[in-house]
Length: 238
Image 1: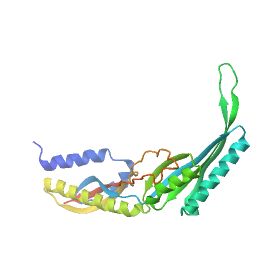
Image 2 (image 1 turned 180 degrees about the horizontal axis):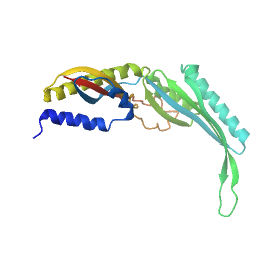
Image 3 (image 1 turned 135 degrees about the horizontal axis):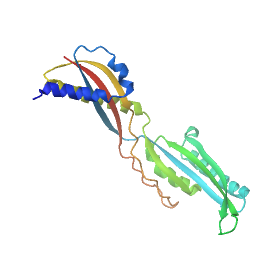
Image 4 (image 1 turned 120 degrees about the vertical axis):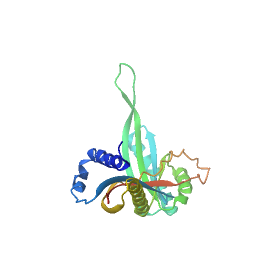
């Protein structure tokens, strides 16, 4: 019957057999005792403090010139509304602009142009999440007729990720202590640490339904976002 120590060492060898090529450099590090590879994930929850919204004006007209002119007038009003709401110029960016013909299709006949559609889309960064709802209402009143978002993020994700890294390393050490005790050994030193990934995406939020101009203060709930970091840690057991 195999001893517990033999089982633990067999598991370590099996894990090493399937390790990626990136771990080759780690294996060259001299280890006097027994090598143990541990993977652990640290997670933190944070409330998003900024949001991005896509707001577009889509217009249709018999001619391209009229569709574009209509679109420009409504988008200019929307940008002015954003400025009036206190959104800084640096946080307003044109994301896309297009003019496309619209066709009518019939069996056995060539497509016929029936008009033109112009689209102008803005990407708006909100540094104050509590302003998103009221500004969306203002945009709709100004002529915006297509909204996508909000996409909630953190202004300083690295601070949260550092907390997740610390948690992951603590979990890896606790797991190494567990294996060491089971094998009748002690954790000596950390030979190598490899980060497997950054933060997980912020929890997605469904697209907002179009708000009516007469309904102010569209409710916005940022909730909490989970950020996670996975570490692969190589320990030396003595």
